[in-house]
Length: 280
Image (cartoon, rainbow, N blue to C red; front, side, top):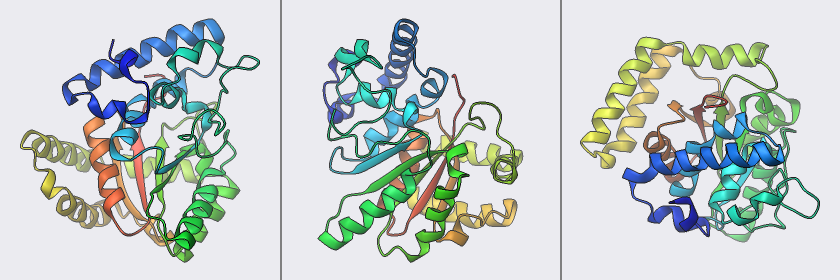
């Protein structure tokens, strides 16, 4: 098993790209088996496996700070930070928390359930980093339902006044407890409905991956922004002072890693819109 060899956060970087799909499958099988025994959140975690793997590949943990909201999507995160052997204790007294917990590992930067507090916390950490002259990246992974609550929207409103940068990863699976409703859900839906645009975009990404044109990644994403603004009329996040990248297939590890790398290397605050399937 590949998963058995992952004891700490950077061990996934030793896995070859050809084995990424096998590792994702091992993680899903492990989660299904363990949640059947212990209970817990299954569908939300099955949808976030590739996204979790890509975050570890794109960032340097625990130096970089990653805050999960919704925290119950972090089971794969626990496995990839070396907590596999303790997973039998999940949600049991004295055992692993069902959410991120800084007392368990330095990789867990903050405790968050699904209160919409991750982006606000990330902005606080980024402000502290800048005051101390640090260089670490601060990432908030936020579910689409969590992003629509008041604290998240207040944090979005504050992004433009932030001197440093934060990276917002929007994990969009169109679901919370049930199907999302309201204006924000409709907005995200419109971002995904340009089918012809997304087919062309996917074809271009596949061609780039085959030719390994990673050195053109930044140019590609800049061109994508221009085309997207014309085709989709998408300027919502830019109005809050964040560069928008997406939508990205959240189950294509290479595509997610590429998008995160662009966000990591940009000097501005960035939102990376990842589209996943709950229960995949």
